[in-house]
Length: 269
Image 1 (cartoon, rainbow, N blue to C red):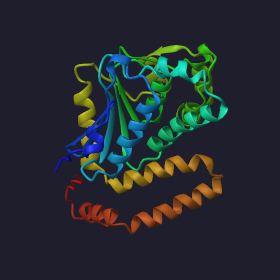
Image 2 (image 1 turned 180 degrees about the vertical axis):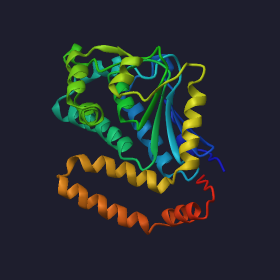
Image 3 (image 1 turned 45 degrees about the vertical axis):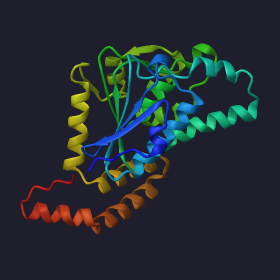
Image 4 (image 1 turned 90 degrees about the horizontal axis):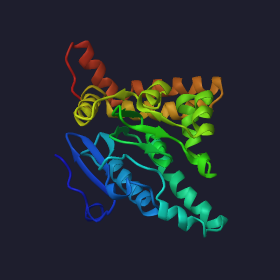
């Protein structure tokens, strides 16, 4: 059964959450500000992702946005306020955003970005930490922080993992805004889809993950891929072997193997 959000979620100003067909939709809902990130919006995103993680009606999460822009980065009014911050306040604010990115990156559930418009600076950071990204050909992408004397610091940690050092340097050191096709070539975006087909394509992809894959297996695979890059070779192999052995004894693995041996089609959700 699809869920009904709690009163706390219904009270959110900048974010909407709903779940249907085992897909949890988190929608940036500040179109008049091009869904720009403020302290309050980051707080609401944290709350929405925490709810989606615990929501039994949600197996896969879709991050999307209202209006012509996906996310324009930091809110200009908020940037002006930051000028009055001291180091301690700036560190607290930076940590607030870091926690959101880490939260999304380490969620058990798969996160799919549905990018219907431009994603710049912090908005491009949100795209970076999605496990998959669908975008319209008209969308633009870029980490423009260096052009205003700022640093794309937090996103660099995730972008290096996603597309490698050479391409990360090209994007972060130039601050260039690139096309959706270039973002796809770089590995930032997975699929280019027309605006008319975007929502349907994301839905079909999310439903395919829900139906054909074990949620437990996807969660463990995502955790494994996040942890292995930081491990020495021998440690990563031992870790992989341990996960392999543990997975073989899981309920989902036993169910899946039984269905395979009996030549039965298994539907996970």
